[in-house]
Image (spheres, rainbow, N blue to C red):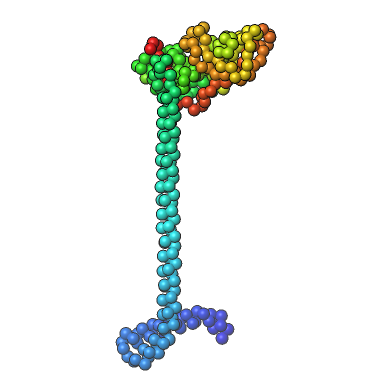
Length: 270
């Protein structure tokens, strides 16, 4: 008896299996309808249990399969969404650039200068150097030392190296940039130097010249490369030189040098 109790479930399982086998045998040979009926009554619950378990297993398997399909579909939709967002962003960028180009085309001082439009295609920045590259070159009539402008005659730099189809432009904020300038309000003159790639400083201004914040600064007739009257910027801060013999001023340019797209090269002649 202790052995039976210990393995009671195993005995019951073996009994049910034997009953199923015996019942199947009697059904196959068609010996006795009474036995068949008794067997049917005994095995019906077992069949129901197995049938229910089979249905439950099928449902669970279908559920997990469907979950896997949904995950794959969600991943596919997510990837498609990212692609669409990327395309929309690119279209927005193209739209913004086109708007910028249209605005600059309106502002270009074509009635005064012989200008050639050019696109910024590269940039060299580092060590206080501010250099950009344009998609115009010798084949387009570009030469060294030609002025490069934006908007209504705002000077941003000059060509320092022209190749066949491209050209290198040094911005006026470059540490090696130099240009002669004058203050419109007072006619005072001085030399503008690029300052650490972010701003400019105008030096050699006589102490007798009256300076004010916001005064307009343009290229002077002493310039070696640029025509007179190109806008350079506005006086932002005024100080004295270390020897107190001259004044100097920090010059603020209205140009966003970090977001240059379309520029104009000032060609020789009109």
